[in-house]
Image (cartoon, rainbow over all chains, first blue to last red; front, side):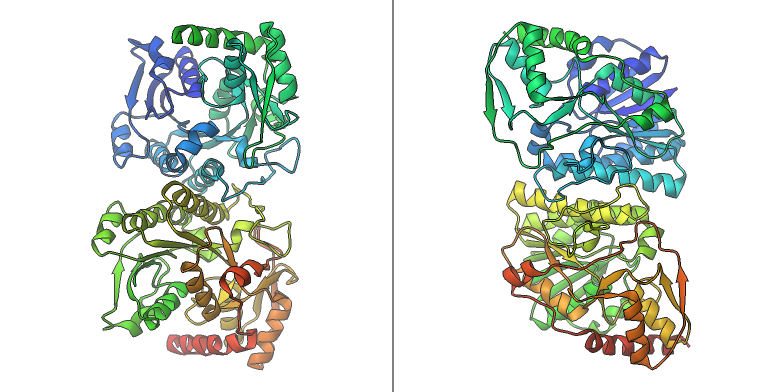
Length: 318
Length: 318
């Protein structure tokens, strides 16, 4: 199949490109490189089934330019500023990636009657009042807080995706992605996995926002990509949670990393940022039921290649 | 002052234009006339302080076209498909009016360092779990339901407005408008005030969705417009509720109309539409505190000119 994917040079995007090529598809990747990284796709240089285009999916001529490169069977909208550090630095671009870029990708899908998938987020649940979060939960999001540029942008992306499905009968999918980790995360994107790992590898104190009792559920990127591949071929039209339901506190996560690396860095506590969720855990019963999917990679197993990746990155930086 | 107002030919927009002209301002109104009505502004024909332009605020050349007509001191974004009947018929246009049109109006405000106001909605609270709703309540909105094209569009409009304020220091205001009624509502827009009034005036049964125990709080349009005028000149940057806190059930409202018109039409009950809110009542303590505003017009007092308007419209139709 012919696939168009935005955010192709990002963390999840680049892993998905690898998987799509491995599965025999032809892929056109597009990225504006605000947070994407050429290095994530450097290994595909010369692969004739893959083309990478530097363009912003919000550009006025994006739809016409991309349409020329079709036809496409699959249109995958992954472009997003996904880390708080990035979206707080680029709030307007973050908003546009959910609105204008999503509409543009939907328009391309519509022209080719292609399947469409958008990567939404567990942030749609905000600071959830239900636990774990099922797809039917409507969320608890502050529409005007500093994080709303991301959360509301993704909720808008879901709403416009459903509107295209309802109005035009487009075959759309919405993945609500929970915390994901693995190689190709940016060292300095501010999220807890790269932050703890790079600090631990450099023997610095681990920065803990809040008291560390807040929980996260970390899904290894290969598992996530497998879930996306199943979802994009499914007949499910409403959102599906993709994440690892194994919930741990950040305190326990910090201990695991220290044990794994055989280090004992002190923890440095800082205040919790505004509207930071205190608990986050996916209910993946729906993904199991409609996609036959569940994560397979345990935390230690997934951390090993991730640590290796960060060690390489840190060594290259010296 | 020089004012740019989108949605100028709409129900609330046209009343605001009248008020701005009465207050001595010069007004450029713009409307795409999807739901706006030339008739709402026909009385301003020949008024040299007013210009009306037919253009869609989402058009690619909207910002450059409007900027040529400046400078503006006030940029007011009222364009919206505000009735469920309209936004369910035009879901994609509804989404765009919250995203692209809001961004375009913000860009114009930014170029002239003008004050900016966007009309948001009580629909941001969704089917509220708190009652009455204060501005700090984050809402209970279904991001993928049929109504999400409106609700999420408005939440997005709030988020992008706050992002422009935070990023560029723009003086922005967000009005969360609750149910408003008065002359110039469309007879057939599907909302309860025009629906009940036109049915009662024509001796037809009143269509009641649900059992009629759901509540609404109706604010007369002159009160609302006064609140908007106070808000657009205030230093408040976060949302302010504007509405009438007097809450009545639809059953009581139907009785009032019948008593007022001296008719006894039967009620015809229909199922409640998906995600229709069961209770909606503004907490206006903040508007009282920061704007010195509260509604002054009682329901009977406001219904009188409204009935008169609908009688004229119905007579003209015969």
